[in-house]
Length: 223
Length: 223
DNA sequence: GTCTATAATAAGATAGAC
DNA sequence: GTCTATCTTATTATAGAC
Image 1 (cartoon, rainbow over the protein chains, first blue to last red):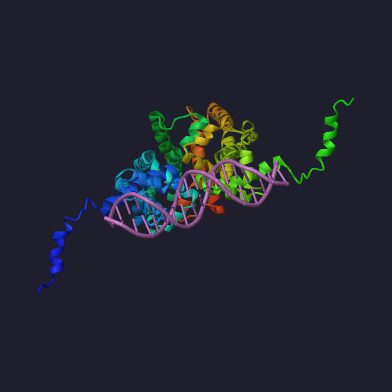
Image 2 (cartoon, protein in one colour):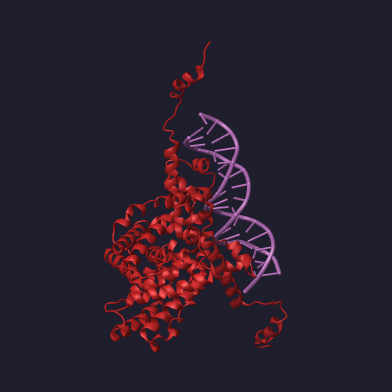
């Protein structure tokens, strides 16, 4: 009589079965990266599942296998891209700096972040064209973004207490001021560049804008 | 002998021909308006020619008859929307005001314009996703937008000469500062609103932002 | 888990009558 | 100039073998 023969026999037979390089994690990640590229370049409506598949080392079938639909894949792309920013502000350690230097560091960080993450900016633009429909679908995304306001609020308070910043300042207002400039400069570089014949990717202009937004914000806060 | 009989006979025969309400101008305009609505809501890739036709009092065939393709229709939509702004800045008569009041009027105008023209903002966003590809195709659009810089430059000069504004100011920088805030507040209201749980259409907040950008710009210019 | 082939449908563009 | 019907292609999604 053979008891539990099956279990002991399996492992030996499983190996020889042509298991090339079945790697679910890697395949999923591979699809996600390809999707980011496609969605960034084409938007949700413009993106083609076939095109995503072509950017992949796997097939279209796998996209549906892992993500069920184009829309759900898009939501996961959003979550990933938004997630990449999480915590980065926390690492700025603004509380170790003087209020003025803290603002300067935060502004410069925000500027650099947008400048070097065109993909993120484009996805957010696309998402606004959809009235944030997909961002709203994700419970993950909403849970972020609160750390920025807290950090900023701390710096503002210290500055006001020290008398270098005026009283009555609001963290969300200041964040809006900083974000709008940093975001717009990237999101609208093509139309603005065409209409006024300037090149926003020019390093010199970039540096000038970086300094400019710092000065602008600091003047806004000034007592 | 009958000389020029054809010309005199034509008008009488043309009328009885069942010309219901053939109005090329009106039909064209009708299509263009429908297209604006559709492109604003869906973007270029998302817009459906069938959907545009449904918004029309005419048929899909007419869209191709007048505009040849979806893309060309889109370009004409862009031209129309950009064109609507032309000249409006010129009517501001900034030269009649003090420099500070001139800036205030320009900022408030820009703010109000973006706030009440969400359609324009959305189309520009969409256009940036296409890297201004279609704006570049239009020779009409580029010819605009120069009046703003001239008007602004005049105010800045007068302010600097009067000693109320600091020297070394650049019109494009100031325009960028104003535009970015006014544009971003409208373009990103959905994601920003969702992430920070605020409603940008709230009248009170709107007034607050209007005052805020005025103050921000004036502080930036201050000597 | 992965592939190829294909179904089902949607969408841009056009034919041809009036 | 305008309409209805349709052609053609592209695209999302799935079936079924391995």
